[in-house]
Image 1 (spheres, one colour):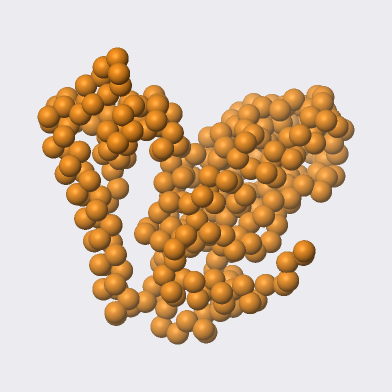
Image 2 (spheres, one colour):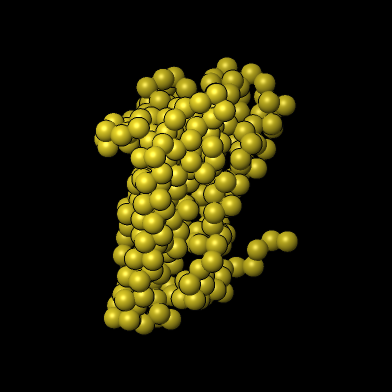
Length: 300
């Protein structure tokens, strides 16, 4: 019930430019233009006029824009009505699951608290870890699904959801099975000197920014290569196809069969937790509160 091309058209019309629309959608201006061009080609209509002052809707674009806004509102109301109808007969928690954010940690929680939610069922909702669209998936918490369990200290993610911290995952290093270091059981920082270390670009993750600055200061011979801010399978593919090493996590050991993931003699780790909507329904909040009571006290 979500159409990225119509979303792009509405964003461009509302923002008045491709650049501002791209910022609001967290994608590149080129990607926005491609979506608009694809929509115009599909409809065989010119929807936007490109001028020196920006862009504006054509008469045809005005019609599509108004109807798209109506469809978005109708879609939201339809989903809410469906949820209300479902809750009257069959109460269900929808749980997102993907390659990098699998549902198993949620299932472990569920089996501990399910007795407090008699009559509830779980429905797994698969989604893609595409780094260009992941923010839309996070923004769908409360609409497309109720919960995710994932690694998260992203400012952009946490602008769109709440998180109950569950623990921490150790930072590790992944590399091709043919890499000279792949035969080791454990790496040292000295092993990484002279190597290229792939990690997310700075500015969004406090944890990763700290690691980057620490390595720059104390181990300048480790060359850092930027990846997109959010990993997807293309990042793991690049690691497998090159001689680079990827800053990874213990929970991602089995993501790519061509990679081996090794612990490193460092203390780097990152928080993972239960993600849910900014304004959750009562039963979702009750689930979060129930899980929170099970957790050990967090260090001050």
